[in-house]
Length: 342
Image (cartoon, rainbow, N blue to C red):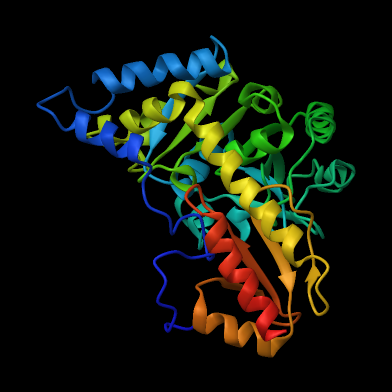
C-alpha cells in the first residue's frame, strides 16, 4: 500500500474510521466519577438488559476487548478439549487471527473451500469422522456478513442450523459485521441470532472505539464463560467504557442507521463503477464492501490517492470498504479517479 495518500478518509477498512459522536459522548459520560469495576457498573448492567431485550430473555452478553478475543473465547467455551471447528477457507479465524485459535485455545480448524465466503452445509458431513484418530467436529463457525462481503439469507442460515442439528454441532456466528447483515436483510438482529448457539456482536467496525460482545443464546453453554473470560485476558477492569458504548449503540437503533449508511455507500459505489470497461465486480455487494478487479496500472495509481487493500495479488482483486462516516462526496472522488485512470 502506498503511503502517499493524504486523505483523512480511507477505503481500506471500517476499522480505519473514528468514533460516532453519540458513542464518544457516552464514553465521556462514563468517565464522570467512579463506578464499580469489571461488570458490576451501571453501564454493564444496562447493557445486560439491552442484550435480553434484543435477543431474548435467555441471552447473556459478555463484553470483551476485540474480535479475535471474542472468537477464541466463544469457541473455547463450546468445545471439548478434543473438539474441532468447521469453517471456510475465507474465515477470519483461518486467515486473519494469526495462530490465536490454535495457540491460545488449541483449536483444530477443518476448512471447507468456498468461492463466495459462504459455508455449504452439504459439505459438513465430510468432517464427521467418529474415529479417535481424527479431529472431532463439534462446532461450525460462520461470519455474517462473510469476509467477502456476502450475506447469508435467513433460509441459508436455517439450512446450516439444520445440518448442525443433524450432526450434533454447535453453531458460532462471528458477527463483526452483524449490523450490516441485518441492514441488508431488513431484519432484526434476533432473526439472525435465532440460528446460533453463540455469536459475537461487533461494535468496533460500526461506530465504536473498541469492544465486541459475546452473546450466549444456548444456556447450556454458559456455565464456564465467566472463568474463561478472565483466564483468556478478556475481562476489562473498567468494563464500563466498553459497555457504555454498546448502550449508546443500542439506543434508538443507532447500530442500524450506521450499518445501513455504510451499506448504502457500498451500493452507490457499485452502481457507479459496475458498467465501466476494465472493471470486474467479483462478489455480490450485500454489505459495506465492494470487491473488484481493475487493471494493474489503475490500481497502482489509485494507491497513490487512497488507502485500500489488495485482496488477491494473483488476480488483481482489491477490496474497497465503506464506513459509517463515509460520504457520497468521498465515493464520488474515488469514482472520478477510477474513471480518469481507466
